[in-house]
Length: 284
Ligand code: SAM
Image (tube, rainbow, N blue to C red; front, side, top):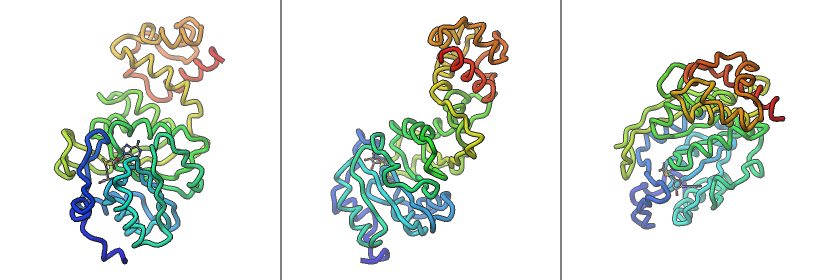
């Protein structure tokens, strides 16, 4: 079989009885123009090993291969899709590997070459942010770019800047390790079946190693505390983080050089990084 002989996606879905399952967050992309656009956001893949999470019936999978990825590994949790994906593999001999499993539990570094890997995914919404944090936490970061579909509201929270309504934990954690941009807005109608919310594709590029904030665990602790009560001033909202570090809240804020009467949403990313360093220094 050659790529041109692959049956249309709708036929694949009908033949293999691949009705979307809500429990796996399944909404399929069947529009070939759109899947090509998403795959192109990964840049030149001719020297890259790509990984796609949650390929489903394989629309984006086909686009990644058609756009020239040197090699592609798929991670899919729902075994119903495997025969249809194997057909795609037959059209691209030697280029496609399929891993059946939960992407949250897979150790990608076992098969993805560091510095030559790109991630693409129309993510299941319920696991999307967990996966992104997992990839951002990897040390060293093994991927050079991630192209990820999120529900629009989550994408907005990832790319938000200080002062914007969506600014919070997700923006601070993501932008401390990577530069992020919203690349494509996608309407609910583009999916089969359409989800209840709009979506967007973001492009995530890891920052150069010497600019990445190293201690995401500390950053998670201080942002969880500060944004857990985002309307309160820092002296109050950081009580939990100060308690965890066994230090008075005022000392923590002073060590970070911040104003105790400011609110979390007005503190920029560098401010939170200073707070994370002070928290780590106090906690050890
Ligand atoms: N990529 C396909 C497309 O664009 O048409 C399907 C997208 S659908 C939103 C999400 C896919 O992720 C489904 O195929 C689902 O079975 C799979 N999935 C859900 N949770 C997963 C997990 N934890 N690990 C791997 N795949 C998962």
